[in-house]
Each structure stands twice: as structure tokens, then as C-alpha cells.
Amino acid sequence: MKYYSTNGNAPIADLQKAVVKGLAEDRGLYMPEEIYTLPKAFVNDMPGMKFQDIAYNVAQNFFGDDVDGDALQDIVYDTLSFDCPVVKVTDNIYALELFHGPTLAFKDVGARFMARLLGYFLRRGGSVCGCATATNSTVNVLVATSGDTGSAVANGFLGVEGIHVYVLYPKGKVSPIQECQFTTLGKNITAIEVDGVFDDCQALVKSAFMDEELNKHMKLTSANSINVARFLPQAFYYFNAYARMKALGLADELVMCVPSGNFGNICSALFGHEMGLPIKRFIAANNANDVFYNYLQTGKYEPKASVQTLANAMDVGDPSNFARILNLYSKNNALTPEATHHRITNLISGATYSDEQIKETMRQCYSETGYVLDPHGACGYRALQENLKPGEVGVFCETAHPAKFKEKVDDILGIDIEIPARLRAFMEGEKQSVELSKDFADFKAYLMNQ
Ligand SMILES: *Cc1c(COP(=O)(O)O)cnc(C)c1O
Image (cartoon, rainbow, N blue to C red; front, side, top):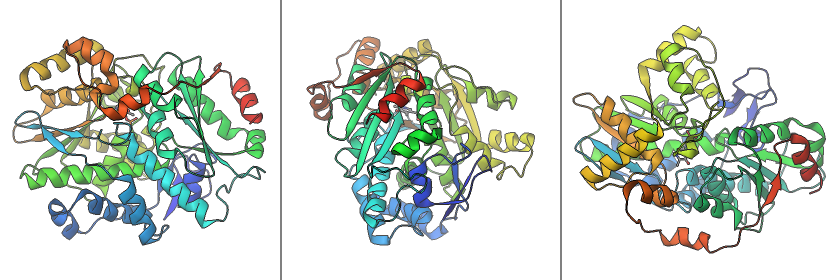
């Protein structure tokens, strides 16, 4: 498979280059040149198949040309060593629980898949960094996080030989439980506490990739949701969700609702749809960061500074993957902006909720159904409640375990939820971090010393 850039001004790349570079030379995002439709027979057979086998079929569709079958199967099976069940919440609303992985959030799958794929490329030899003449052979992963990405990537890459991870996060703006999941690991993981917001962290990472001197000094790659190895594997979830709902006889008019921040997760679902996954329509549920919601209403995309909310992993003011969604539905700019907007609004609708509405939804859902929503999932649940039409069945992603936001959830619901053992283990570790300003010069000087 070849990959082109959404900005249309960079050389075509193969999978290895797209994964190692993350971002194309023209700062665009890589897109696969083809999205093959899966055979109807496979779609029909899915309800009887297990998650790993469904995922392996989907993975072959994207990565089969570039990774040996056995290796790919091994990567997929290792990545999906846990379940992601659909759980009934009301008669027509189901939660797709994406939080049974190592750090109890959906990003575990993309992160682990990418770590294993990079490891495969490293072992296979050849240049793992087509871009640099850097003397040190370690590959350095830079990742900006608003909370969950950092823990997923850090844990996905922990102990992978030849790779060092730098996690940049906004000081004081991630929950203590999130923080301990990437600041206590040590080994090949370094946590960097930035005096700024998530968008500042993301800007630092982007600048580092464009800095010639730095790229001569060390091999840099990204693990943000812009990376094709991070975002595409998330499509596995949606095939599995469809299969489980189909097995229940509830998939005829399936509405998939994805709580969204940087739009990587929903983007993978849309790729699944392009591959022939029979989902009727999608809803992107946002917190108060409503840039995509406004685009749906007006056709204008106007990024702005992010605002802090209860659902902080979705506090994104300029979602990177919007460029991918536009490129997908404009057929790589073959259609006008109006035609593209029309195609997008035909398939995707939006919702945006204030912190007050998130709290109200969590309380209402808990008292009526007993189901404990986390603040991100609450946006998804509410969007289905408000938007499902007669005959439709909705599935929303429960993107993280509520215990990851224990202080908030306990406070809002007036309960004391149990912390899973896996989380408790992180909390007992010792925090290690490096504090930096949001100036690129400081970040660069730090990296040049490594
Ligand atoms: C990252 C994250 C989101 C948003 O996912 P995107 O792919 O960035 O849209 C939602 N909920 C949780 C818990 C997350 O960690």
C-alpha cells in the first residue's frame, strides 16, 4: 500500500515510511491510496467470528501488502489480548466498552499495534528512518497528550528495544490517575511536563519534526493519533461492534456514536464504513470544544484555542484528523467544499455538551440504568438519547474506564467506585518528570542534550 499526504505536496510513502515519519514532509497526514472493500461473505460471517480473527482480516486489508501474514497475525493477536464487549444500557442504546486494555482506555489498541509494528520494522532491518542521517540509532517517539494518549503510548512502547518515548503533557491539566500511568514507568519512557495547554504540547511536537538540526541529531517519530499505525487499527473496534450487534439481531439500523477530540477514533470508524461496514450513520459527540460541530452546521472550519472541560481527553481546539475526514469525503480534493460538506453531513451529525450537561447525563444514566458513565462516554450516551430515530439502535463508545476519572465521577454521582487492580498498581509508583516551558527553544535544547 502506498500513502499520500493530505496536503498533496509530499512524495508518496510506503507503510514503513508513513509509520516512522508520522507526518508527511508538507505537514500533511498520510492517507492510504486505496481502501479495499471487504468481501460481503466476510461481513456476513463476522457475527460468528471472534474479535482477533475479525481484526486480522481487517488488518490484512490495510497492512497485508507490507507485513508478512504470520507477523501481522502475531501483532494483531498480541494487541487484542482483551475483549471489547457491547453492553446494554437501555433498550436501544448499547455501550461499546473500549476500556479493557492495559491502561483502561481505547488508545491502548492503536498504541500497542504501532509499537509492535515499529518493532517489526526495526527487526526487519533497513532504514527505520528514511528521513535522517542521525548518528544515534535509537528511534525517539514524541507524543503530545491531553491525558490518555500518553499512558497508552507509554505502556504500549514500554520495554520495546531500540525505541525511546518522550511524553509531553500540560502541567496540572491531566488527572492524577492519568498522570501516574506515564510518569512512573521509567525505563525507555520520559515524561515531560509542559507549562501550557495540550495544543502547546502538540505544537512543540510538530515543530520538532520540522527542525532540521534536531532531525540530524536524533531519529524522531510520532505516535499521536495522526500516525496511520495508531489510528487505522481502531477500525477493528467497529467491525467487532457490528458483529456483536448483528449477533443480537440489532444491526439493521445501527448508529455509531463516538466521543471525539482529535477525531482519530471516529476517523477509523469512517474508514471501516468505506470498507463496507454496514453502519447507517455516525454521530461525533463533543464536549464544549465544538469546532467540528460548527463545521457541520456552517461548512466552515474555524479552529480555536481549546477550553478545559470535564472530558479532558477531548479538549482539542484544532482536531488533526479533520484533514483526513475532509480528504476522504472530498475524494482527495476532487469535489468542491460544498459537495464535500454535503457528503459529510449526510453521514455524520454532531453534538456538543457543556460540563453541566455532562454531569446531568451521568447522574440521569446512573439513576435510571445503574450504568456508570465516564465524562467522555457521557457525551456519546446523551447524543444517542437526543438523536436516535424510531427503529434505530445506537452504540456509543465508552472510551475509558470511569475509574480513570475517579475524583470527578465519585463527586458527580456521590458514590465510591472501585479502582481496578491494574490502575492501583500505577498509583503506587514514583513520579519522575522533566519540567519545561512551552517555548520550542527549551524543548529543542533539552533534546539536543540527549
Ligand atoms: C482520546 C480520547 C478521546 C477522543 O478520541 P479522539 O480519537 O482523539 O477523537 C475520547 N475519550 C477518551 C477517554 C480519550 O482518551
